[in-house]
Amino acid sequence: MSQAPSRTVVVLAAGEGKRMKSATPKVLQPLLGRTLLGHVLHVAAEIRADRTLVVVGHKADQVGAFVSEVAPGATPVLQAQQNGTGHAVRIALDAAPELAGTVVVLSGDVPLLRPETVEALLATHERAGAAATVLSAEVDVPGGLGRVVRDAKGNLERIVEAKDASPDELSIREINSGIYAFDAALLREALGRLSTDNAQGEEYLTDVFGILAGLGHPVAIEVAEFAYETLGCNDRAELSRLRVLMRDRVNDAWMRSGVLLLDPATTWIDVTATLEPDAVVDQNCQILGTSSVATGAVVGPDSTLVDASVAAGATVLRSHAVGAVIGPEATVGPFSYLRPGTKLARKSKVGGFVETKNAELGEGAKVPHLSYVGDAQIGAKANIGAGTIFANYDGVRKSRTVVGEAAFVGSDSVLVAPVEVGPGAYVAAGSAVVKDVPAGNLGVTRAQQRNIEGWVAMKRPGTVSAEAAERARDITPEQD
Image (tube, rainbow, N blue to C red; front, side, top):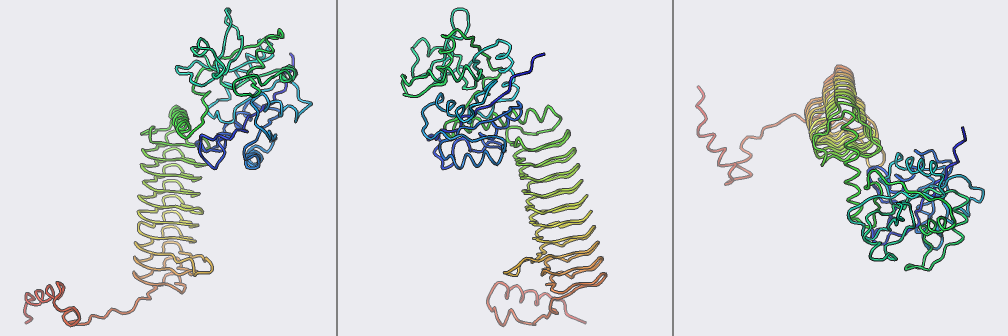
């Protein structure tokens, strides 16, 4: 059994992308958890490329830094002057003179391409013993895309760019995807024969096919099973269409894996997120970054998870969680904001209009409503009353508050860090706690209530309050 040839991937990512009208390079535009280029580099990794060369040009430092971060094994290659796709590939090969085997060329702005499709391209290339193989697609509206011209026998004759095509060629619906496989040695030879005698005055990589065919080398075609995989994008509108296509593909895969998406059209799941069978995602939800949703958990409606985990049986209702760990059977929301460092243990609760940050809630602990809990540790079965504020910042530094197991903090209290409320201790409603409350004690810091008789009549005469008070006195029963 012969050994498979080595695989080198060349990613074309040098273009400026003017029509995107963005300070961010086109290939670094975000798309469901990765950039456009990030999706392409993922494909290169999935097909087990022995080497990946990324041709950079516009904002080369920024794009190159991104490549080094997300694909440390890939090598950025500078194309200082963008003079066409053929020139870009030649620059890449010049940076690797020892390169042999098969060269796969991918476009940095074609993010929907699946590894399976590239594997099919390579299988056709190797089976045909081809010098070059193009991935084509049948589309209804070819527009400005290059056309695949076949001979009378259906074999590839050449690839023609739309700007150089005749009217008959423009009527062809089979388009060039810009995805190719080449024999490395023959590709080098053909690149040396390219000219710039065309409508754009550039070196077209597509001309390599005509050159190789003219030299008697076999060239082949692999037709993509799904044409949408070959779509690129040049502006925000096209990027939006790609986003919808990828959303639908991602959602379909999760539903076929046993996840219940109640409204897929309003559910956005990054490709880096994970969900388990029988997880439920309601309408208008985003599951972003490295978020995970376990079996039996319910997220939504109207919720966003960013790098957050939701354990089995937990519920997140109309809330926003970033970098939070939501434990089994815990409940969050509605209208809660969980910030990084939040950890909720089993059956704990963060209720309506509660914000947490760097806060840990023990099993069964509850913060039911209208509270800020920052830099806190709350013990199991503790209860935090409505309107409680964990005052963690003194203007210079942030400090931590500890509330012990089964402690009870009354409504509208302020816990001024650093402070500790011991296990089983109580804090009376309306207290501002600045000293530790020992276990089993009641902490009370509010002033004794005084009722000043006749204050409204003296200080607010003629008001509706004074009139109501007067009427109340008139109907008060006489005392025996």
